[in-house]
Length: 312
Image 1: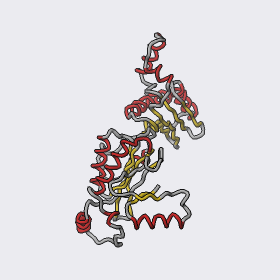
Image 2: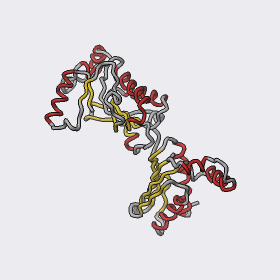
Image 3: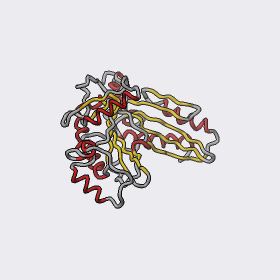
Image 4: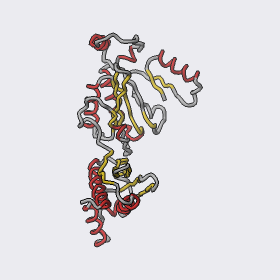
């Protein structure tokens, strides 16, 4: 689905679709100023995978000209964007905030919402609004064209699957760490090469297998495993609840509820990397909304790796 409000742009978009024989795959939709940006209901769509937009950067033609005058060097190419492609009331920030407001109504009907920013200050302001809306599952990256042009992209989701860290924190710009999304990957421990890497890995996997997990799969060749849990099942608090549950079978505890309705609260990946002199144990947060669960799991995995390596 491709949308636009400019009649000339729509005409050429439809022509491009026809020339490339994509009519069965791309639907070009005319919109009007003020109409919804993500018209799922109007197009009778229950859900879509993602949105992608390059919004108009400027809030007025005066804003556009003022920005051009601030540049130290003239552009290498002429600007070919139409007025509707370059200017919108409130500029790019207002445009993407409108997307955010619509996303808060549509929520998981779109797997990932994404947009591009031309100004870093607008990206920072938007992330603050994103987090104020209670959205913590997001990703930031940047596009660099040579040494001259730099743009940024933001994506956010109401679903629990977490992007890889190189995607979620894919920018080298001077962003404050508290603006970037949560860390999703960590090396928890490195130890000298054990006598038997197989035995070392077996001790770690045995400890994970002993947990009350929804699922756990370990690849013995790659030394990687993925698991899913209903809660912090490695924590003392969970074990205490389980013990109470065993002592009082009729008690309606959190663990008994989770067992009957095993919705994943925390998904993870564990890996062991082997080099010439050392072994590194790490993990990745793959699913869920609770960052403290990932921090807690890192502690469990570090303790487990220490025991496996006989490190005090």
